Length: 379
Image 1: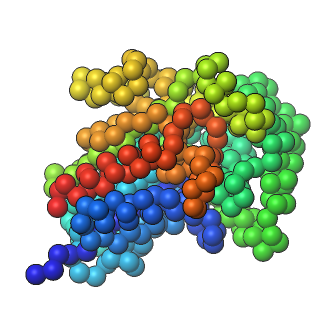
Image 2: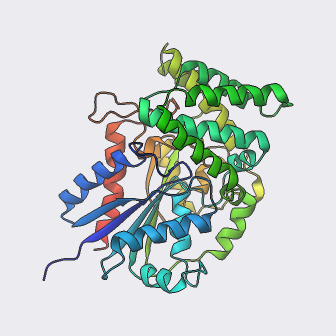
Image 3: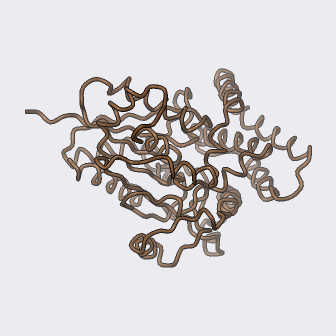
């Protein structure tokens, strides 16, 4: 009797934007997983989900449900969910026993078919960065960062003048922000938008209008809100659960020197440091207590004791552990899904921000080999 095809669903984070044509969030991950599962002898179909950018976790989860129903709704083939960043939260909610999402029968039927969930750099206990993005100016900078991500995926990098101005704005977020700051932010946004074709600009304007009208996700990612999410969202004992934890190297002179004298790398590194600083402000009330084995695993991987301030530039390290920790890596939030520098690879890998993590092709392959092995191990 032939074995069943396993359906792997790649669930994006809050920048897994929809309706953007050739802009592909999971391109490198999909290629790597295909090769890994082929070597492991597991028959799979891999699906990348397009989701809302900043809508609530519940609304994003319903979009995930629709994607699964459309591509693997018939039959009883096994399902596996891999969620990067907030995509992991969507996967968890979908598989929560008794979750009321408005399509309860469909949810229950699909959740029973899920064999495993793997989360990658996921904010299970929230991130302080979300608290900043709920402010008026923070929401404006979030739109710029989203547009920067799309720009990098399509063109390989963003103008250095944009990086410098954006980094300066993030550095000043704790200061008094007036009309001038908002004007500069608008100018930066318009400059980035001008690099796209007229047709694509129209698509992006629609996207960011929709984002501005549906921003339920950011308040939900605040540590205070995720404290309630974790209390309410449960697990099914039959689903195997695992996480991948990423941490960027602390800011240091060595890291700056490692980037060399390339002005673009130095400028994006300054922006990364600003994001990392905002993410480090986790209140002690919401820091999870990891078990000794988890702490020892992190200590071995990084060669030092980690603190609540350690993060990948977007999510605190201690917020990322959930279930079995199957891999720990020194990387930033977007390195782990293939957005690290490797221009010689086909297709080329483009770095989102220069974090100085030294994450490379070999580290990427090792990470996704571990993910594939975890999934295949249960079959």
